[in-house]
Image 1: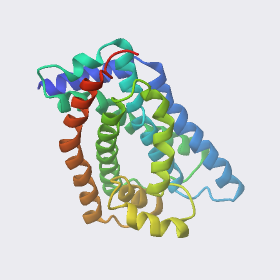
Image 2: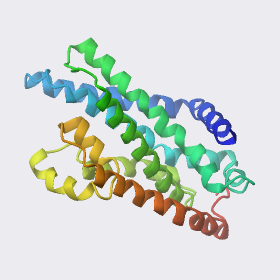
Image 3: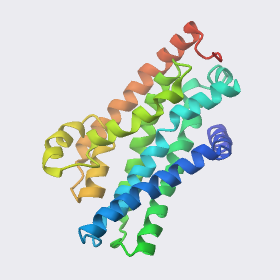
Image 4: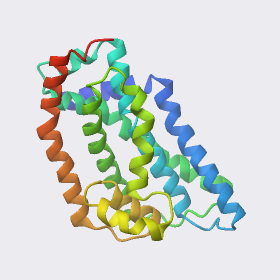
Length: 243
């Protein structure tokens, strides 16, 4: 119950910042319109993957705001108290960062509504697609937690926010030539948890369940082992202070 209360508190705090709120909306809309223009020019508006790719991009963009969350809490002076409370520091960090990926789920309804308005094919939404979106959310959340733990080491965490998103999406195979990316994604799916769900949602590939759970367990193991050590290092450096 305490975990849920902390999570709901951080959700409210997260949504109070208009930057976080509008970033997901604008990133989803902008990438959808870019793809729409290209699809319209090539007479490919019957491609239902267009809105799914836009939703994926919006969700991951929202997830990358974990850097902003760390910087925002440091700016307010509350980060030291969040990581030095009687509550487990890893659980505190998770409740702080989950709102970013959770809010990112709204990128899919936004992309879907845009597709309906502009006459882009959406296809039939299946339970399997909903499951894939849920698996994608889990992957985004786990990756965001581990990445953000490293960002606590720097008082300039927000500077790195823009450097997180694009390289990982490229490695996960969201955009680009499928023939070129296919060998890369076959390798990256074992190390990046979002690769499998992205391939299934945006390229109609079957999900490699073994690779997905292996990559997810790898990141979870790193969270268990590394996060506390990083937080100990942060305290020694004094990086939780406002600099």
